[in-house]
Length: 336
Ligand SMILES: Nc1ncnc2c1ncn2[C@@H]1O[C@H](COP(=O)(O)OP(=O)(O)O)[C@@H](O)[C@H]1O
Ligand SMILES: [Mg+2]
Image (cartoon, rainbow, N blue to C red; front, top):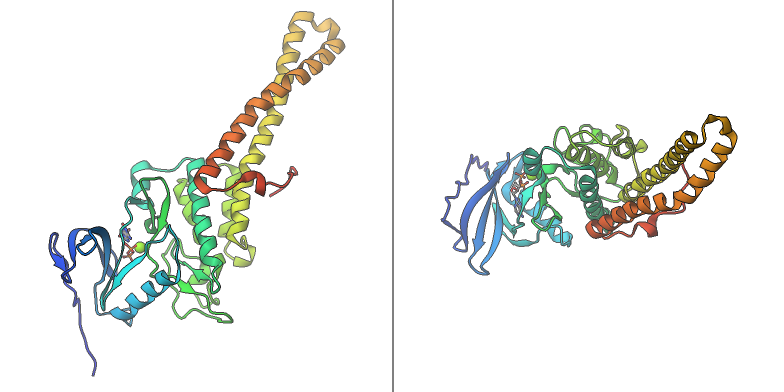
């Protein structure tokens, strides 16, 4: 028997009680397949999120299959940045409520993030992707974009919407369905180009970071983003760990350049002052005087620039819990 049911689920009214347990507070969002509500779980008195599948059959799948897939992955992972499953039903599931706003909403209001803010958020996301990719059976999230990332009031992020996520099958060749969001999805998510792997999330990560930056950033950071978003996944960074190391290294590289510039500046200022006071007649001795004067002053300049570097390291430690010194090998000028 074929059951044809269109829009079998009715929208829930504010203040109505769903399944005798959840008092609906407001609608949070609506996508193609689901409506998401904020509610209070009257059993625990805690705020929750209810994701209600709109149609009994969507994209050839029954609602309970959709529920089972998303909660299956959410139960498989266990991370403070991913909401836990409270309950599941035939056509809906209930998650812990995460306070805050999606990064897409924040972007609409704020325009763009400053480079160091975006890098700090990026580092957090990379930590989370590293966790997902390093499961015994790696989880590929496949739909990383600002709308699926929540910025909490404490300044940290949470990842929601595991509707497109898949557990990587050892030896599997092609995903059954190529999901993702247009504009963010990696090229391999469109065709039968084989199973998606961590490099698919790396692509979406690069696109997301670029969007957070409003498309503008330093050439050093752009180089890293390009390393994430190359069309051929063979040309991308191989792991999130590698990207994080590059992100932690690049401010160091910029600081070193500044130190170099600072030395030049001290030298030129010294030379200029000396030329003015001793006149051009003593050009040779003036230059050697300026050189020794610069030598004497460079440590103070280095100190100041060093303090800026320490502050950046502190921010990274605070925001990402990462010790830069641990990751920073003695650097060469053309280090990536
Ligand atoms: N656990 C949660 N806590 C708080 N808000 C959530 C949560 N899950 C979803 N939302 C809100 O609902 C919106 C849609 O949820 P999402 O899971 O992305 O659904 P869809 O599959 O329709 O994209 C999100 O952008 C977010 O605002
Ligand atoms: Mg979503």
